[in-house]
Length: 120
Image (cartoon, rainbow, N blue to C red; front, side, top):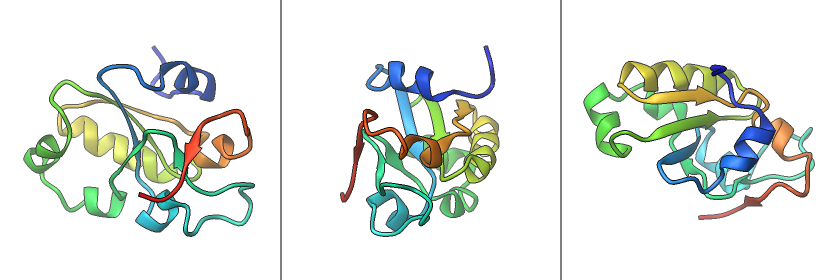
């Protein structure tokens, strides 16, 4: 299995029991209040949980395990796959089966058929 998740796999797996889609951008980006001007729409992947990578970097492995369900499979994304790549390494070190979606919001936002949401 590839370490990365592509758009088609993530689309198929949305809503899968035990899968957490984790948006590691800022809270404003995740809520759709701000974002990159190159993206045709703002918001987050529908159903995604939010945990800013900046906060994630301050947490211990035990604290991360308190935030996410034991045994969860995590797909992390950001705007272009860089912050989420860092998040994946932190999540793996905390014992999670974590993979990166390198296309991230930059790719997802371009396809209107892909579900998204804004606000909290």
